[in-house]
Image (cartoon, rainbow over all chains, first blue to last red):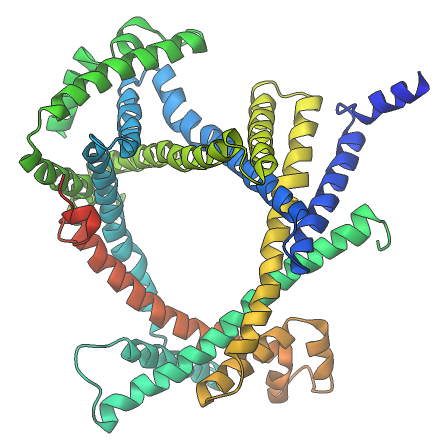
Length: 224
Length: 285
């Protein structure tokens, strides 16, 4: 009886400590299973990969309903804005992609969506980039401007112009004058790619450190 | 706006029969669900019958017209002079279209879920090797989804803890683990990319090296002998890393971004005006 009582206690999810203990164990086993692929491909990794994809897909359905469909569609219909029913008809048209005979109907809604996205992109381009272009051409001299700021701004403008010239394909870069800026642009690009690479690796490393910290701290209580 | 208002009035007069005419706010959810399904079947059925009558030679033109009309409100709203508040008479309509686009995107998510389900169900039914993984997919999918909905509909201690347990134990933990494994693959790829063969590769290696060292304590320790203030402080690795990321790297990224944005604008215009070529746009309908 005592054993059953203890088992019952272990599944008492009303107690947040019990649920937290389960969460830590599930996460720890899952983390080790996923890292096992670093040694070699194995069935345990495959199993947890499928569990992750399944759970992430289920979560995305839940989030799509609670954050988009419920407030923007269901709540509007049930509060009297009945014309939102037409969105369901439009949404259903996507699924004609599975019909060989009527696949063209899906293209109507895909086309409309492409048009909507293109329109938004067109509007977004002007809205975003006018400010960004303005902010990119910084002053290189001015009243009371420190030398360090002037130099920084000069570097910024030279790199920006050089990189842009690299993507300028309207005429061939034949002579020295027209070939120098793109060449400098390529060097600047490689430098930036290196910096982006370093930054990305460090972001991944911080995730790795986070997982190791979780295993040694929250799970095994070796470090605090 | 007059045309749109007239169209809205016309559609509401004749269509959503159940949701507009027979149900009132406050009715039970299952009544609304039945009403929505009923309206969907009626409206969808009529639209399907109309579309079936469209001759094959006009289908492309119809799609091109609807693609164009989809982008028109955004272009009109952008070019129409704004009032003092920054909006014009189309701004509210464009925001509603934005909501509608999000709703359409959400319905399209079902395509991906359906494809996943079909793939895993096929493997499971045919008991192909590794079918237990496909079963695990379904168990994880429905468990996570139901836990989310249960917590959302009946929020209590059990539902909340079970949802947190599944989210924290599987989605969040395995997500960050998956992404952190990419770090190992990036490093092995870097070995091939960074072998010093040319000036450009050397420059890339140097930038990556400084940025990485600048973000870890050992980097700060290596240059800790340099004073923290004054001109020489710029040579401390953490400062050098910060400067590289915020000056030359930012400028280069912005240069690339301008190029990408101009390309995206040209692409958007080609798509909007149905000038794009390729299988989607040229295939016989």
